[in-house]
Length: 312
Ligand code: TXA
Ligand code: MG
Image (cartoon, helix red, strand yellow):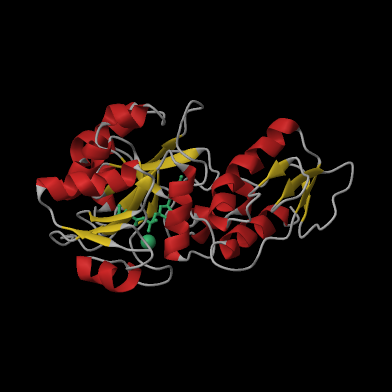
């Protein structure tokens, strides 16, 4: 894949935003670290993020927005959220809010959770891209999985060229540390320490944060299987499906739901969480899933499937 490098002039930002609009992946600066963004409502675009990062598992992504109205179209807003937003947004703070049933955000971007992490960045380039592309943008830090976050365009260029559609080479990320993540439910908690101090948030809300990021279960929700395993039992690596099973296939086979007839792993990743949700809607008690190749984003798909199939 050819990676286009853009500067921060208006014509270049417009061209860069076209990448988001057309379902591609674009690295852009935010005030914390560089983000690797894609249209959060486009499942294939979101799958490309995981593919480019080489993430071995699906971790939920932060959804970046330019206005509160935009967030209210998919997340449940509250007076606490309003108070925090008035004080810290735009800025290096992320809030986890309940997802609305009418949300158009791809379930893959949320790793199947019923909550959504949202942030309104302060960096002018990030704001321009959000406005020009006019869609919520899912963006993890723009680094290959396991590598440190990027604070300069050069970091991204050296590691992700050839793997993503575009990189905006702009002014660097001043904060250099990821956003602080807070959640209000089940109780107010800090999920990740970051650029904004916990005590400043406590003060403005007039409350104490009970849970701390030290608890690995809380800080890494993407790793928790119980959040989104379907209710039915799962049989992995099924070459033959049984009559009493709901079948999830891969490739040109007869099945109830096909992750990708063309054996395209990006398409399979894009469909995965949607299908896992559908299984519960269908009341599936026994589920069988085709073997998925253990390569590229297939590693993350298999990781997710193993967690979903693990005994509870
Ligand atoms: O500063 C930042 O936050 C940067 C810039 C690009 O905005 N982004 C970033 O994204 O650090 P990432 O993917 O590297 O980290 C996102 C964190 C993950 O630890 C993920 O588990 C957590 O946010 N997260 C996302 N959605 C969540 C949810 N619904 N509930 C709890 N945690 C969530
Ligand atoms: Mg990261």
